[in-house]
Length: 302
Image (cartoon, rainbow, N blue to C red; front, side, top):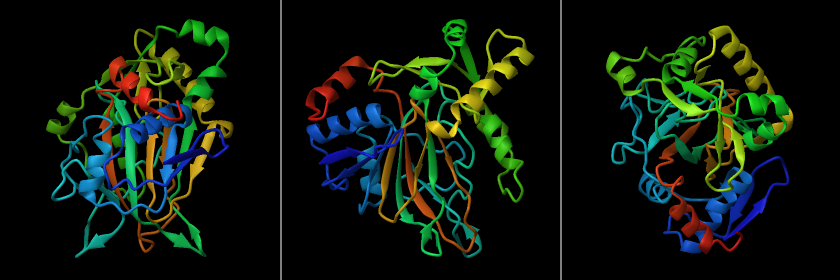
């Protein structure tokens, strides 16, 4: 396997590996090291089904199952279907997934480590791919913060709320999302995380807040909290921190939730089909020093 950086603010391309087959220890170590270094890795021209996507993803940690129970693969509930395709008048997947800046699973006590997507259908228009995923580098964003803000907020705790993102998506024109049921909301109560996190792979500080789920800073007056978060959101989304992935059929994209934000571009119509299979991986192992050390010990590129 080879992993080559894109040369942009983040991102890498992985080749000479078949992800439908079990990873060697060296390949797994290289991927973990590259996630810490580059944030996003694309493996083009792959051929995965739901079972092999799950097998690849669970090497990195436990897999999340959708709280709504909708749009999951019938044989692999850990695999979610993201799609605008309808069959017999019914959607086969979640059509508006990720269409705002966020970090998946920051709304959980055990946050997300990686997201893994496999592209089965990519919309095109005039020969150009649509539905790109855009990322932002939270290590770079942290480094560029004013020193006085780093000092002031070094012990700050941010409260993340799943319902904030859900309601923002429901408010969009044409949204078909229902409100969360009381049962679903009970499964996703607000949670607390440090505003600045130490990345478990690199040991570097990152900015862990995102417009989708970060609701307020604990212990602050709400107006002061809102002002600081709005500053952080504007800061972290500057174009200089962003990287765009344009999809191709057969791409497997894996990215680090801890050190990145992302959003999906909704620049395609219902008549331009898009379909992705997705696994969400908990950070239930990556914060264990022994897990990281074992992975990096085998990494050829470490």
